[in-house]
Image (cartoon, rainbow, N blue to C red; front, side, top):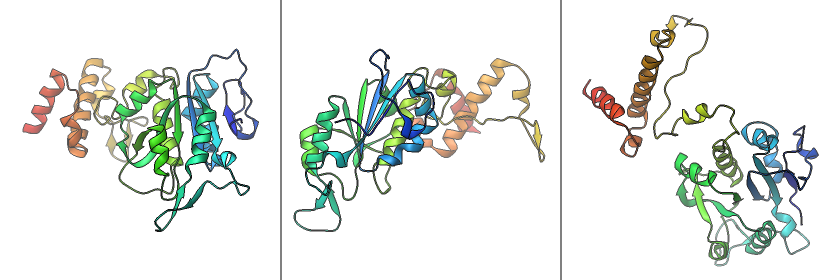
Length: 267
């Protein structure tokens, strides 16, 4: 059975209904498979942005699988009532296992509130994999036997509730996709992102130089690259200390950053 949508590098126009199969001679990069009961939710992800760009460049191979195609009854059921009673429905194990068997291989990721928290470090780790298969949960979650059979990498995007695993799966894919070399045109922009080096980002400015009495810092207009580098580094430390001080406990700081931070704290 084929995925409902296989996004490939040969497409010239990324309209969701017009995706073509990948010719055998195309060299693929990282492959990401989404297993979901709502495949159309992935249309915006695959139409524009980082993932679509990576696909067009041949760096990403993205496939969306409709879990209902792997149901075993005429109603295409993918969930049922829980044994022991209780509210809500539980995702059936058999359709998920059959779909994963068809996908074949890959690092299995299960979107789950029970999983490890998704961070930039986890994104970097997953970007080192050749093939990711992301299972999108719904309702009360998955039949426990899916975990027993697949031993998935359970990942949570935070301690809050959303309606299903599709949005978390897209967030994971976007964060992982931009880590793949070449997907984002300027690799420096990735390296300067918040969290990439364990700190929040420094402030950014563009035209005009003055807006309603607010001026761009003089150092950024100086053309002095070393002073600009130090200013940005210090501002990143200040922002992290003010907004996310917990990050400093695990950030990999060099001697210059530690000296700056010590001075900031003594102010």
